[in-house]
Length: 207
Image (cartoon, rainbow, N blue to C red; front, top):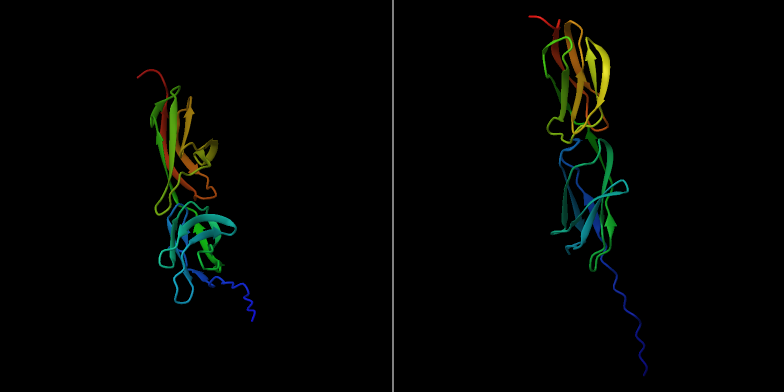
């Protein structure tokens, strides 16, 4: 009697990957976002790793713990996003991927603080205006872009932000009282804001 045995092939267990809605939703640029992915395979708990993707871009990779992978992330640009989870094949388990979840990140609000080095100056004196722009919670990040400087409502210069600060020095202001405004122009991740000071210039020389 001749017995012939074929090759026994053990197929990996199928898996299902789902992803919960991000929280908070919508979020603000620079705010931490939490998202949980669940991987199931019947009564058996899968092991391995899960990759979080935004469209086709990898955001983060996390290991499974009791069938869950939790992601806390920040730094995605303001705008619409499509988040999905991809389960990498673990020992004895097939890979799978979740349906995408839409998520919107809003621009962070900002505040602008304008100061004058010499609020009451004499003609001929150099006056330096400093505008500091910062993000308001729950947003974060250092605003980029430019600040426009206005005198009595008319733009007279524009200065690029450097580490959230724009500085403008004026060699001489004619005699008068001026409303000086620093107006931060919004960027892709931060909203606009402005600040005002009153600048007084008197005739130089004498007492």
